[in-house]
Length: 451
Image 1 (cartoon, rainbow, N blue to C red):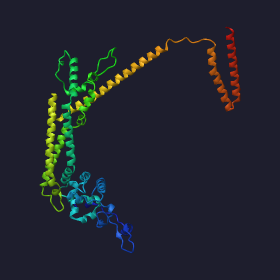
Image 2: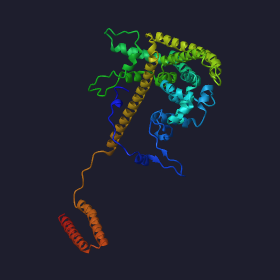
Image 3: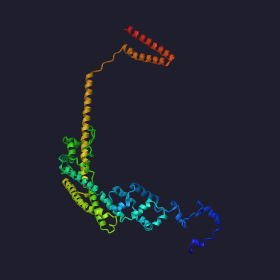
């Protein structure tokens, strides 16, 4: 057009058209007419090799879809999604399908190829493109998969929520029914009031559950009489009635599981199930469902009614659980915070575990103290039985006794030299041994003659 580069191009230099065709014409076999090599964008574009055709999808997206298709192992996925066939589609398949579902941009890009299949010959068309095109024909694909996933996961999620409600209810009951725990709490209160006597914190009527965690942090003073430091928790464990640790562990055995749970998490799960059923109800009223082969209403319509009844039953149990936690906090005289409703359970569980460890530490310390006392008494007994030490004997017998191992050592060296064939060394050792023996005899004779 006017004003463009192409309107003002200079005249090109002349070329040899015959030589050009000779260079760039494909030679056909069997005497057929040669076929000119196509130029991109020219009239021969339909004969472009497949690898030279433009790609609709980038390599990463194409590979992602083809990997998913390989896991489906040839199952008719688009038809199964349309019919919501549970014999074909499993829970894990839904996650893969949601990742591989066509995006709005891909739907728009693929739309012309559905209207005119001949367009597929103009691009690099493969299994990934065919899969996406087939999936664009499924009405409300994203919403359909989300609702179907709700059905597939509903029973397990409901059971998990029910199990957590049951665990928290048991924990509340065991706290309310424990006999050892109030006794230990009374002991802790007594110890605290004794230490705080004469201060504003003395004569307290109770304490918060958070104070239980500070018992192990409170350490005793160190003195010459008591060089070893102990904690207030170890003191409570020492003065507590015997078997307290064992009884507490038995009475609070249902507390461990609940200490790691979240009542707020259970309530959130219930809320999530309710919202998913509401979304399904809205989808069931959509006129886009119900076409040929579409099993959305048949698969999810009646199921939603049954699921709604189960959710209402779960709601009642969750409300009962939360009410029990509120009453437990009131029983302890503590404020109830919905977001930290199970914190009281966790603190008591930590105290019970720490108390048991403190009892075992005390038992180990008592055992070691007993062993040290027994070892000290045994050492004293052996010393008493041995009596005073006797003075050593002096005289000629002592050097003679020491001469024997020396002689044995010298004979050993001589024998080793003989075995090795070191005859010169052997003669030398024999001479040295004879000199020592003669010297010892002379010494011994002189000692006896002097008596």
